[in-house]
Length: 404
Image 1: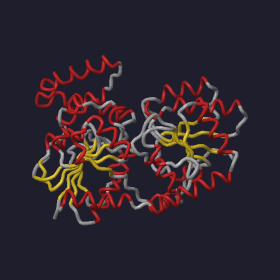
Image 2: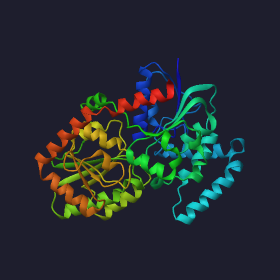
Image 3: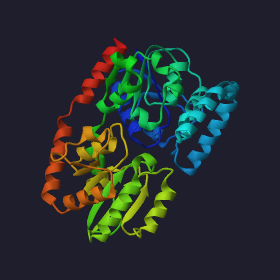
Image 4: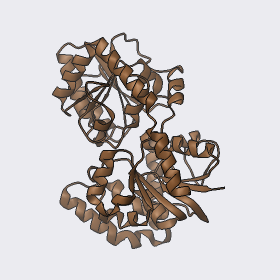
């Protein structure tokens, strides 16, 4: 039996993790044997692993890495990795050089600095796999490149390489050791190749795999909004991180309130920007209009009940949340950035606007006032997703390159 090894940084509830579960599910259904290692050993989605996937971590905590317990465990993992086998001593020159580089650029990214240290401190693997897959950039990629024996190695990345803060100095030649590299969109591939043009011939696009029927089924489950409100609902799904630029959405809601638009805006997700965003919501007097609901196990009833889905982020790879909203036939507004531009055709199945409070609020006001327009956008989006076969085609090509 052909055997896969998969590696990812965490299994908390997010887009890449959701796509990975579907990827492994489809491979398991084809009869492949699958092992999975989670670099941090943290994430609540481990409880949703497909049948037949073996989790290799000796210690695992099925909690969100963004929760208080998750953050505490992550710090513990970092200390353990630093002390294990002299890792900190061996990594210190690289850590110092990369930290100084970040200081010069005025942008310090602790997670980028620590991924290789965490990868070196993660559990060992044994044996030789037919294919080893690093399903996300950073720690998982370094682990597969440095520590896994496999006949073929494949790397996936889900973000704009440069904007996310990765550099060749951080990577230290790891992509040279992969047989194939996969980006989730054309723009993500282009951003990677601007830095690594030498890997053009082995870098491909692999669109996220989603379980469309499963999403439609889960949307019919009990749940969703519990407040007694009959007005228009705006929904955003995403981690509360700087990348998502939620301060722009809050300011847009402030403008909508000042213009007399009756609506509430809800955000599903958790992250390190919560305190900052809550302060901005309070300062803007939007406590009854803008709600941070946290992460939920099933976001689809919320999507089903929303009048408009808004994804106004700074940059993306290819947003799973946008695809899920399209599957459920929602009218969608996205910001004009990498990733978003490939997912929405403005004026056909949604709208694209600049990332500013003024532009976002104007587009929302126009869309919420035109129910027929939103209905037409939603129908076009749902039809596009129903006819989309790019994921299956990408999977077939992936197996041909790596398993034949």
